[in-house]
Image 1 (spheres, rainbow, N blue to C red):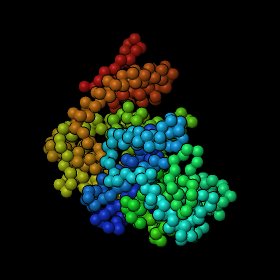
Image 2 (image 1 turned 135 degrees about the vertical axis):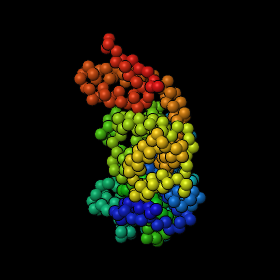
Image 3 (image 1 turned 180 degrees about the vertical axis):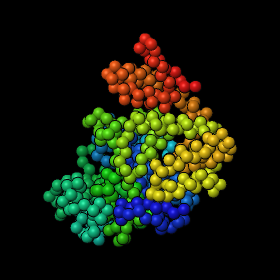
Image 4 (image 1 turned 45 degrees about the vertical axis):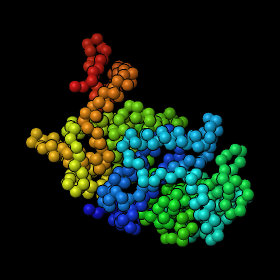
Length: 462
């Protein structure tokens, strides 16, 4: 099969040709670990986990290196650690452990390497000193700044007009800057902020700018150029644009990564997710209500490059789908690899720029085939193996049912609350919301019974 990927750099969907098929290399910007990750953080993790699985199938598990970094030095981290009265290391160890648990519950494979920014200070120093020596960076008032005008084709990834780049760069206005677009590679540390010995002969301890971290970590683990760089669409500018500038100018290369991939924004019930709007939800909060596999299927039901509207109704549909699929496969063991034509069919669909909605539609068809009264156990195994390529149906039907019962026992108060909300909605003649609540509960294995006295009772579906 041929893998075709949309490249943000070229604005086209092209055949993927790794620099070395025996060493396929992918870097994805990971989290800044200062609190529980929100559901928007889950999107790139799930999307690029699917790509990782597909690349491993095409080139072999040993041939693919997937690097997802951890930003463990940042102003938000410093502020949160100071607020809690703990060290940044203690904070980041705790919050990264939460993140690791959450993404494992979402069915994501661990990356090949998870580098920490604070463990790559030497590489950052080396890059910064190269840039200064070649005239692409300069020292000013104990800062080191990248000299943007020194790179004639700066801005080729985002393709923004200069005035938009200046407005969107979110860089500090400072008298020591040679150009408004210049950005920080290294800055001094004051007032108890963490610091390390500075490069370029600067006496004051300092800490890195955000962008240099990823250039240093990708260089260390993947080389001067590599195959795929991924992340959210919000990172295109300035973060990824500045990564390209640093890496290309340090190594005098034409590209940093051959293919740049970006997932779209996430909306929550039709609105931008925001703490100020009161509609901010974490992965962990959702895992308290739904199995991780439900969140994963709901996320993959929209193509990765499109905006996604994250809704409870969508979660309910995903739960209902998985309930049916587990009923189809029962407790059979997957058939994977070359022995499974169903998996090959699914891989072909994913090969079209990671088209997960098309792959999921095909899984519905394969479920129909496997559910036929004359279907053999082998067909069920093949169906399950195909779903495994998306990170789905990793459990057995028995395990799925047991987890559903555990969740129901834990969430009894939640069920009663939803029933009360449904009764209020019916009283207000909001029948759409009332039906939506019934569907959500049914998807989770709860059957509602409206009684003659106006009350509603519930039971676990048999």
